[in-house]
Image: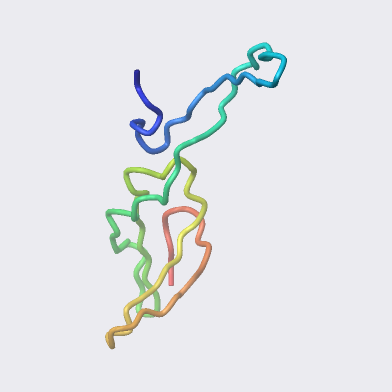
Length: 102
């Protein structure tokens, strides 16, 4: 028997249920997708400068979604930059898509 906890992240589990009481058991329920094994997404990968969009006052870059999305669609990204003093400054929250110009 394959137990549900051996499934990879993002897998769904179809299940049927029976109800029991002192008088017996119910009919079997229709099957349903009762659970999806989910987790946080992998970090974005392949961050690169878009040279053709670079100017003296702005730069652009793009990235790809990580290999696994954790079982749910990635909805946005947070873009931060290194202030060269050991801290990061958030440039934008909830960036849609996989390209950003600053």
